[in-house]
Length: 156
Image 1: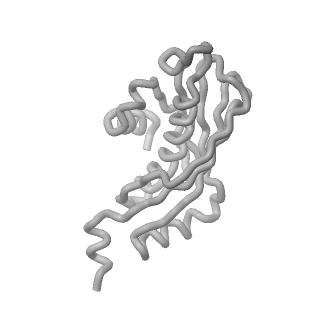
Image 2 (image 1 turned 180 degrees about the vertical axis):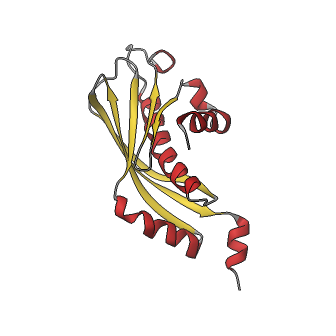
C-alpha cells in the first residue's frame, strides 16, 4: 500500500485523521510513519494536546498492522485492546509517529493464529518525534478478528 493510498483510507474511514491533519510520510513492511501539524492539535499551552499525540501513535501502530494484513490478502476487523503512552517532552511543533512491531518474529505466529482460530493478538510500539528528538513512546496490543464469512467456513 502506498502512502497516498493509506492516507486516503484513513481520511475516508477514520474521520478524526482529517480533523487532526494526519499525513502519511512512509509505509513499509516493518514500519509506518505518520505526521501531524501543531495547529489543529494545539492545547492551551501552545503545545500538542496529549490526546492528539496519543491518537497519532495509535493510528501509526494500527496502520502498520492494517497494511501488513492487507498486503497478505487477509480481511479482518482490527481493533485496539490496550495501550500505554509515555510523554517525554512537550511537543512544540509538527510531529511524527513511527510504528514497529514489538516482536517482529511473532508476525507469522499472529497470522497463523488468525487463520486457525479467527482471532489473534499482536503487540506494536510507536515513537513520537519532533525536530529529530523523541518526545513520546507508545505500546499497544491489537486484536484481529476474522470476518464472519471466514469464521463460518471454519465451522464443521
